[in-house]
Image (tube, rainbow, N blue to C red; front, side):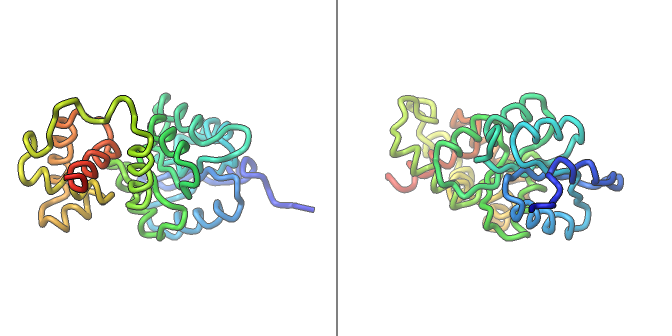
Length: 237
């Protein structure tokens, strides 16, 4: 007989966090995954788990009650999937959402992107990558694991969408500066602003400025769309 508490009961048992702490809600229907994520979060100074949920409907309820700073969101769950939950949480501006995925099904990634998720990381990502990802989305960045970026770009190209992600007729080589082209290439590799700054020898603040300008000039609204354009620009001649 399973005597474990449900995620809802665990959430009620969590105490308030210290002022200034980054509060995290973990959403996954697998107990082992939630436990692993909780260990990562709670072993990091300045972070605390304020609740857990095993389905999307519960995630929405707890996001409203607990007001977490970041939700670590699984995609495939019973009752309500992570896409629907992400859409509601972002629509109500309850929290930032960082998706943790195995990207078994491409449509889930596209759905989560459309729903407003701020980032995608693999469940197998290192603890450092997960913590860095949460910090990044709280800083307003969109986080994409390189493997996830490659999967999304591949699926988008194979789907041959009727409406491409760039404004018709815009050539990155014509509208972007040399530095902005370098940044676009790095975005295509799925790198964070911090990593781009290290690679190019510029500050993270400067990278953010370049990324904003690149996206504005290309007429895109997400980092994934910019990554797709980077692929088409630098691998298709």
